[in-house]
Structure formats: structure tokens, C-alpha cells
Length: 155
Image (cartoon, one colour):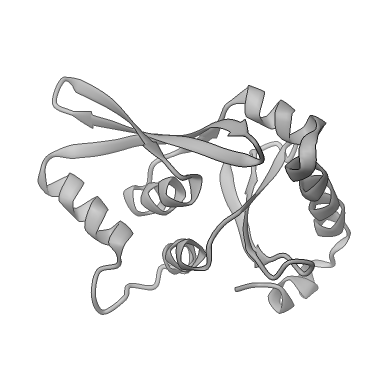
């Protein structure tokens, strides 16, 4: 999956990260906090802050220790909350670290690591629940937008 966009939900004023697969078959909106959205936006826009942000620090510490972020996986959807894991490699050892998707995405961007979403999460998100109905509402709204209108909803 790729980060297709970062925008503000016009109904709730909450930031949303839009993940899309390469074939445009799946769109997964994930509502995130303002600070996490800012960390993602800085990386997407390739803006380097004058001092390291938390995700920059985390990436720098991992790099200094010789660990590599291999990938981030949005792994579960429970009670309208997404879960993720960051997979790290350090020497011959591999580690799976529990993370919020927003933190995982911010770290993946800094590490140039791929992002995946479990097929079961995509099915859950598309099939039911409050988050799914919000996602469907947003998906329909998103698909109806003229690309020139994106700038008025960006963060």
C-alpha cells in the first residue's frame, strides 16, 4: 500500500491518512491524531524540521544501533481501532513491534520501508462496523472529488 493522501475529514475535522494499493482496488482511510498527521505530512512533503521530531529520533536511534525497519503491517481492526506492527531486523534477529498505524506509517516513510495491510483487515474495513461505514462514506466522497479540489482539504 502507498500513502495516497493526507486530508481532513470534512465531517469530523479529524486528519485521515488514505492508503491505496497499486491497482487502486483497495482504499483504506485511517483516522489519525493531529500530531501523527503532522509527522506523516512532514515526511511526505520531504520537509526536514530544524530539530528531530519523535519519529525522526526513533529512526535515527534504530539506524545507529544497526536495526533496519523492514516493513510496517496494518495487522488488525478491532472495535473500530486499527493495529499495526513494525518489523525490524537487527543482525540475524527479527522483531515485530506493536505500534499504532500512524506511528508505523511515520516511521516507514522515514525508513523508506514498505507498508502492507493484512487482507483480513481490508475485508473487515470493507464489510461492516462503524469505521467501515465511515470509510465507505469517505471513499464515495473521495472518488467524487475533482483532483483540483484536493488542495482545499489537505492538511
